[in-house]
Length: 114
Image (cartoon, one colour):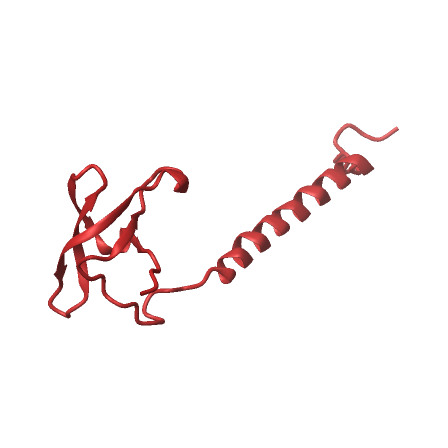
């Protein structure tokens, strides 16, 4: 029998506790890896290539916070270039005849062949 003032011996963790701790550590490492790795796969389009300006008469798709199949098409009727000559704002006309003003980055030009 041990005296009452003795420090109790540390309790050995059982095997199931060790497995659950190991599993959670592996899951944390896996989550950290995938969250950082997926960002390296995303293409950085900003300033890597020159994109032609939108012009009057271009057919565009309006990018909206809706499912892509619900996006509307429109025709460019007026462009507003910035001081650097790059078109930043565009007036467009949708099929109903309504005229909207949208930033050029929210419009996807349709590839039309002449």
